Length: 484
Image (tube, rainbow, N blue to C red; front, side, top):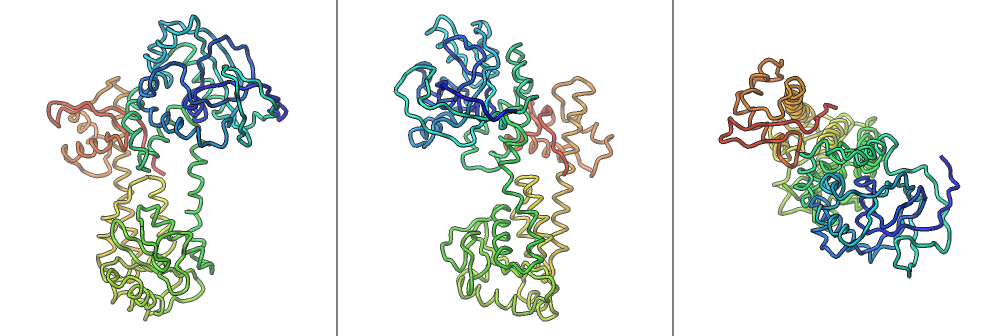
């Protein structure tokens, strides 16, 4: 690795192509000329290499990102975010268009159009590196290569893809090996429009990109780095930092799936707009109302004034809603006898920070595993007061459901590996389940319902070939469900 690489020119590419290179979705560019091993900045333009529409130029699972990238380019402050080394370059044989299209973001139609416009078309393999800081340049030239007025000094310490993933992808393209998991790429077609407003779909998309080698674990870890706060919930709850605990509790309920559009600073869920003196510590509006009080302490006993304050402030700021709210107190310290009686008599759930952290960790590890309406049912049933045990029971139920699903996925995977059967009928899977030391008994229809769930586009653990009836459906393995 070195820090003194000097760049004198930029390679001009369509903005969506560069975005795909930055995501690791792509490792090659189409060029007009043979490019010897060289180094250059990557310059984004809003023009494609032919006159086709975006929907014709890119695969359907990339169209949304391509359209968004082109729209945002005009408003971007920076048009150079990365640089690249040319690792290899060769001309493209027109007979390779079908496989090349399968391995890249371009449609067969786009590649054929490019061939029709040019005598020679070259495929340039690019090892891409992030710049420490993006820059903007003004360009008057309309060439594929642009001379930089001021040279750039760059580093190769931050590659988009690690060596092993890049080498595997490069070999696959050089030898025109077909995609290893076309079913997952078809799943991405379905997921693409859903990722705009659905965080679960977005997470699944990221997982699939990682599995396919289109991104690396570092990228995923960077996306999830904000979740480090989850590990601090219990620690802060057992401290004297009441404001930080309130902030973490609010973030926890948002992570679990709650939301609030209420702008009242005395009753909201915004982690940056705490209720302060005279306000409730947190209020959730959707999918059902929840109101709560936080008490960050372990050395002091929690007095009856804590549940009493929730009653007083709840009625003050949520006069029409409070009685219908699920009521929660987050407290680390031991409650006095009067505090427990007050909580019990007013149907309040007293939960420790440790149990909240465990619940949020579960949601973080298995996105969408917490059913908020099942959680509501748990919170609204007796006993009230100290509620850790009933929450632990709910968590155990979820963990058992995850283990069952992981077990079924493993049965499908092992059967495929041991027999070579690509698609497996329900009856066969049911027989294998009975001999697999199953975690719990299931009848055939119950098992089928879970298999359907696991083959949903929003989960994507299994694939499904629909039969003439439910009993003749066939399933196949797509990805593991690891147990944390």
